Image (cartoon, rainbow, N blue to C red; front, side, top):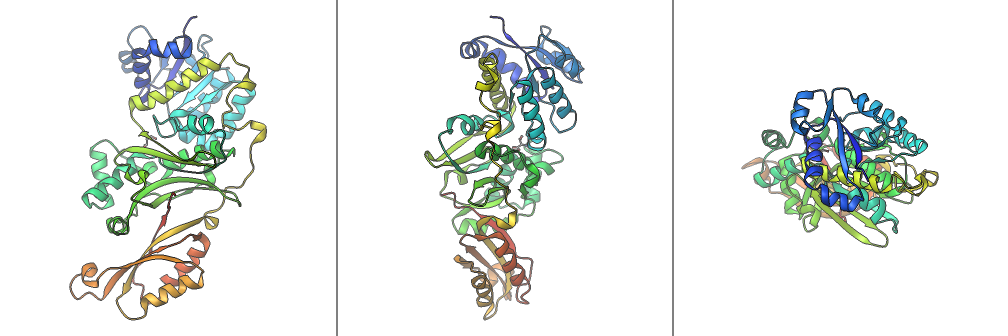
Amino acid sequence: MKPIQVGLLGIGTVGSGVFNVLQRNQPEIKRRAGRGIEIGMVADLDVVRAQSLVGPGTQVVNDARAVISNPDIDIVIELIGGYGIARKLVLEAIEAGKHVVTANKALLAVHGTEIFAAAHKKGVMVAFEAAVAGGIPIIKALREGLTANRIQWVAGIINGTTNFILSEMRDKGLDFAAALKDAQALGYAEADPTFDIEGVDAAHKVTLMSAIAFGIPVQFDKAYVEGISQLAAQDIRYAEQLGYRIKLLGITKQTAKGIELRVHPSLVPAKRLIANVEGAMNAVMVQGDAVGTTLYYGKGAGSEPTASAVIADLVDITRLHTADAAHRVPHLAFQPDAMSDAPVLPMGEVVTSYYLRLRVADQAGVLAKVTGILAQADISIDAVLQREADEVGGEGSTQTDVIILTHDCVEADMNVALAQMQALPTVLAPIVRIRKEELA
Ligand code: HSE
């Protein structure tokens, strides 16, 4: 059988990885897929550079629509990124009857409902393994490997840039700005790192995982998003003294009231495997009612790790494209007519535990007032750490840091208690609040 024909839109880091791995591993891939997989056409604005990457045997054009309209192309890989032209091209490719493979988490997290509906109507597949955690086959695990389970929660380190920065802050005692500079110098962070450091990239990814874990539509607009740019080195240090590491987690949980969907820095017990994921690596924990806790670890970005995921999708499509569309794996794991309308909960309704750091006047009764407010809000304290005033503010200091770990409570109750504590005249600076996940 002749190889299935693939058109590639955008040949940057990931695209060239796809091209190289496909060439290098073609015999193995063919044995798995049942036929060869060939990139027959590439579209890129920089035609000369693209041609030099793929060699003279592959047609390179500067117009993506020439790929989409080519009747010989069966699958279109979209590696352009962003929500603008990429959305238009993906919808046009679907309309032209092409299967689509994309690594574009932003596009699917924001416009997934429209794109999956169009694909369903047209009977084509949209595959996106590379959109979440790069080379880790987490979409496959959630959508296929764990189908026996009621998934209870998913929690992941799904942004390598921020994990690298947090590792640098902890290892070297750096503050955020210095660690970000290191990450930029080493190529782990982009010149404009906003999407990564403010949690947006992780929120795109956890939105996709939430949809396939619970069979709900993709709802990026309902995700709570908080990044790491406000984290202070001293909180990483205090957390360590209490037996925790701080990680940027993407978390989604099924609760009796609805679905939690959130990204924020979290204290994680240092003894958990996931707390020891360092540098730019990614890891995702999934808890299912039958399987228990599972953990997936690997590279979340990079040319060939991401290509590994893209090519896995190409193989899946090659195996399935002649199958009756109704017998393929549903895009979002659940049959389109069996999706859940469980609401995504506002952050105020989320239940979690907390690390609080209060800069207080070092005088009698201060701690009693603070713990009194927590008691009144029915928030139970798990641990308290008070630093010596001299250690915090230098010799003769009259201020100190009090660190409190709480048990689970409702976020709205914590917000009320925080406002009351902040209003105490003996609380001398904005209270630091970081959420805590036991992941047990
Ligand atoms: N910028 C992402 C990260 C990789 O730092 O993990 C692509 O999603």
